[in-house]
Length: 426
Image (cartoon, rainbow, N blue to C red; front, top):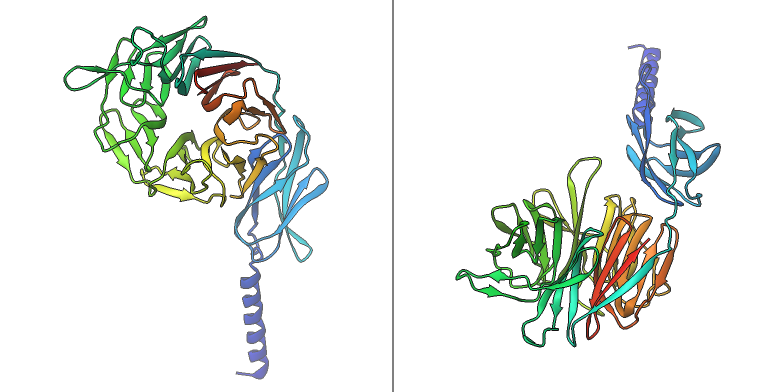
């Protein structure tokens, strides 16, 4: 072959190699760049940027209006962009671009969004006291403002001083002490302390998983697995899809017919469980908080997968996890030692420390990421409005164990020589 022909061939191969490495769009091929909202808060947003096909090299750029607010090197077909310092309840327009060597390879369409507003810290409250020494309440479930159940162990009947009440019910006007029975195989009624309650409706209520109220009577449903522990917390989508957690790493699922124990991989107390349906996949994301005890940190958060396997997700070393709550799987809140959140980037960060609550934080429940309550030892109750906290301490003697929050009504329960219920409403 003529030398000139060889040179043309070599140059052509080099050009083809460079085009393959840079992966610039071929003639007639266009990069598709999309921008979607991953999480929109009061003063922050996380946005997902996706490009197809993936070019090699280049820079992501995020624009808020005409201002460049974020940039990063392209290493994958999608990434999470972050912007902060925004105003509450304010409309912003974002767009993304992908740039290489001064050339814009792709632009996204504009994305308009409005940040969340802060919620009001203005709550009224009332405290109710029950029982005598050693009485305490462990959990609460709100059906509505006229139907609330709290459970625990309440000693107050002088005629039967050793037979405690194990529940108290609010009918919209008053609290009534209750003894919820558990019937064994012989039909004998037992009245033991109850540690957890979950109400799906006024005629569908579970008391520590072994007792079910069907609207007419209490039906005992013995857990037919080795579960030698009080049920610390329950969560589920219905009575045919119910999860319970307890000490020694115990997790079990009820499908309406039988109980099945899940292998958690831990032997420590599981304190809390919460789940939310993913808006992207439609699957339920279920997380558990695991805490060895007071003054002891780790291991953190467990995830129950759709196939009923359990895995540990990364947690903050040196912190205890006693409760978990979220409305969006991309943004998870937890408390125990401090108040933390896990961002869409997968990083845990503290949003409230000892300057907010200088004690162990026991339970958190919310209506949205800008409307969350946290209850704690020594009577601390904190409300997070998406930007800051307001802490009240109606009674510094109370050790709160749990709370529930629904329709601007928060109810917290605990004990301190007597049993206490604190109702707060906005």
